[in-house]
Image 1: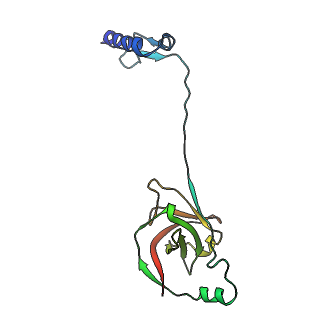
Image 2: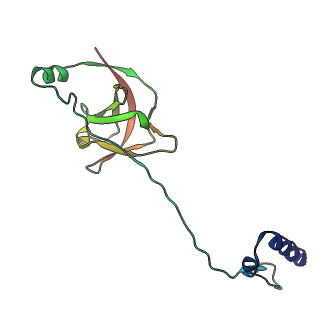
Length: 167
């Protein structure tokens, strides 16, 4: 059996490996079936590549250039909440701002406002400087799966999303 294996490896080596590469292999005869019968004499190196993508949602002012009465009027807008799916596409998110109580208002690139209800023990005021998250394998921010990180060090799960529609 070992002779057949050595012959097969020799034939493969002759066809695929150069003489220098084939010289790095030794076929060893042993009495124990648990010892390796082929040994590689060369040196090899291990390379590991990790990739980590962080998505940042900068803090957005409600109305960036509004002054006086316009700013007060913008602050008094009442919203009606409507159910939305369990996930948001991360590529479509543009910014965030703290909302009332334990909520974070997220603005999309389309101008749509989505309210994210944060998990227990999380305060919206910790997200005054914005939020960031790790990009997931599917490119979505989902409830009860992904974490939102605040620059203050807080890590919060999202309990639910609601679409905000002005009344």
